[in-house]
Every structure is written in structure tokens, then in C-alpha cells.
Amino acid sequence: MADVGLSWRSNPNRNPGGPSSVNPTTDHSLNPHNRINNQSYSQQARAQRNTGKAPEVKGRNVMPDGSELTLEQAKAYMSFYCRKFQFGSPDIQHENTKKGRQTWVTTIFVGGRKIGLGHASSKKDSLNEAYLDTVVYLGESDPALWAEFGSSIENQEAVAGGLVPAVLFKLSNDTEQDLRQIVYSSMDCELYRRAKTILERARGSGPAPHQANSGATDSANSKNPIKALNPALFEQYFFNRVTGNPAPVISIPGRSFPVEKHYLEEIHRELRQLSLPAARGGWVWGDPKVQKYIQRELQEPLALDPVTGKALRDNDDLEMPFPLIALVIAWVLSKSSDGHVLVFLPGWEEIKGVQTILTDPRQFPLLGFNFNESSKFEVHVLHSAIPVADQQQVFKPPAKGVRRVILSTNIAETSVTIPDVVFVVGK
Image (cartoon, rainbow, N blue to C red; front, side):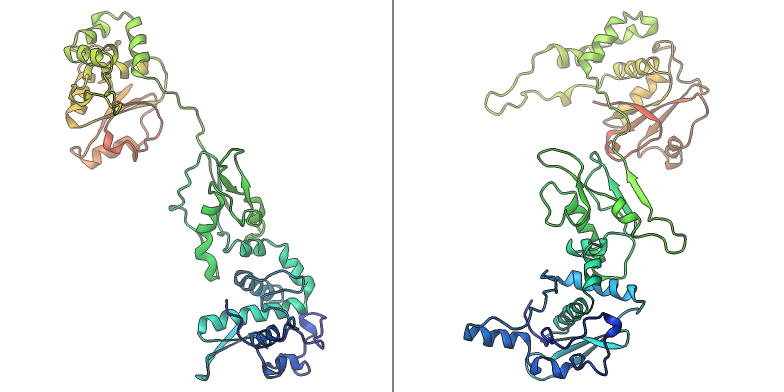
């Protein structure tokens, strides 16, 4: 930021007793026309640099404790200060002098007192200068209050370059880092829009410059740890002023149960070990489609291109083994007492093929199950060819003791979420 504008940093007559001890009628430093002999800090600094002397006044963004003040901190401190002394919002006045390079003059009034002044070539820069000017003055007037602000969460988030949302999110290690769906409550500051960036940086794999100040904590001790905000720092600060309750925290947990994967080799071995008679499902092994599929997938060695390492054959030319899929569904149900089964299939033909076998127990017996028995089973189909009203039935709670088999197109594999599904069958 250009060091332009007027300042009154070196006034030795300023009363340091605090904001209530400053009298605008007796403290001539409050008059912008009396500040530093009507010279800007930049003008003095340039003159003293030319003579080899150090500036006699502080920089426009250096606080009494020697810390460097950022624009974000200045705006946060203004809010902190006005709330502390119940001044309400500061009064900001802009004037375009249309003279010289610094055509815009911005004056800030707090509690009816003129305590901030900024000169710049643009309205925005003039306002920023006025913010910095005001807060440095307020910091000099009440160093204890500045120190209190320095340890506050408000300052921590200002250092981070934004604000914490009013509704906080505690993100676990297994939660996806995509935060696009998180909705934040609006706050009375233009920095609100940067809250999402803070959360994303806090959870990033690389080190964030603000993580020590924004409440970001290491959630995993690894080479690239995921960061998670600690809500305990903020839920009390953003409490509900009406009820006194802390700010709500929405916890997004990771996986709450283990996921076990069973591959075709293992399933085929266990099914063959059952030595099923034809009347209970043994007929499946005599089906030509099943035999061809097992031959290609489990018995023939996979030929690979010696250069690219890719398979030399395409398994997509294999017909789907409908009987084997139906037998796997029945086997899964026989090994458990509750939970639904979700089956992903390539298209309508495959869905109808499996459904036909499941719903015809006389021609296609499967471990003694009768999927037409409505008191025990429901077979649902999810496909664009099915009316929406029929597809919506799968999201309604079933009758007590009823287990569902859902045959779905694999287009919905990454988007469909069905309650109480415990088993998933897919290619």
C-alpha cells in the first residue's frame, strides 16, 4: 500500500489515558490541519531518506507494541472497539477535492469524534488509509485495549485474512475436502466472503501461514496432514446473545462402519464349496453364460501387451452372467439377517435379466428364497424407464421384517444413497 495521507503519530501531547480522556475541543491533534505541520508521512519519510536520517514518526501501519497492522486487523479492531464502547457503526465521510494527486479525502468519526483521516488518489485507497490511521490512533490511546484485541479470536481471524463463519464445521480426517456445499451465515464485514478460503487453506495439505492464528489443528500426523478447525475456540465467542447458547457446531463424521470388499475369486470359491443341488441353485453352474464368464475371468491367464502393459482382450464382449448375479444376491441374504442389497448393472437389459430370475423361483430356484413373498422381500428397479413415482418407493421405509433388493443402473453409482443398504454388488 502506498504510504500517502496525513498522520499524527509523533504528537507528544496526546493524552494516553484512553478513549474517554480525549477531548476534541482541547486536543489539537484531532484537527487534521494541525497534524505534523500539514505534511504527510510519505513526504517526511522521503525528505529524511534523502538526508540519511531516520523518520521521526512511525509508519502508518505500526502499532505501539511494534506489531505491523494489516488492513484486515484494522477493520476487525474498528468493529471490536465500537462494540466494546457501544459506539455503533463508525461514520465514514468521503470528499473529492479534485486537486492534486491525492484527490480523495476520507474522514472517520467514532462516537461523534473525528479520529481517522486518509488521503489517496482513489476512494478505496483513501478509505483504507483512514482505517489504518484510525486504528493506530486508537491503539496509542488505549494500549491495554489493543493488547486485549491481540489475544482475541477476532484478531486471530483478521490475521488469517478473513472471518470464521457463524455456523462452524468440525471436519474429520475421512471427510471430503470439497467445501463447495457448506453454507455460511453472512457477517457484517466485507471479509466474510473470504471465510471459505480460510477453511480450505486450514484443511490444505501444505503449511498455511495463518494456521497458528486461525485455530487450525493437525488432525493427522502424516507427511501431508489434513487440517481441521477446532470449534472450541469459536463456539463460545460467537454465542447467541439472546439465549446465551454457544454457536451451533455441525459435525461431519467419517465412516462410522468398516467396509469389507469381497472379489469374484473369493465368492466363486465359497459358492462352489456349498455343493448346491440344482433345486437350490446348482443349476447356475450349468448356464452357458456363467461358464464362459468364469472361464474368461478366473481360469484363462490375462495376456498383456509387453510394451504398454495393457490387457490384449476386452472383457466388455462377455455377456453378463445373470444367474450368477442372482445367486450372489441370494447368498448374501442367506448370510445375514437384516440390511438391503444394492446391485449396480450396466443397463436395462441386465436389470431385467436379473429381475426375471429373482422373481421366478420355480424355474430359477435360489437357496429356497421366494422373492415374490411381499412380507419378506421387495425387488425395486432404478432406471429412467421406470416411472419416478415407482422409483421413489425405494426411499420410503419398508414394512417391518422386509428386506429389499435394489437393481440400479450403474450411472447412479456415485450419486444414489438409499437408507439401510448394507450390501453392494457390482462388476
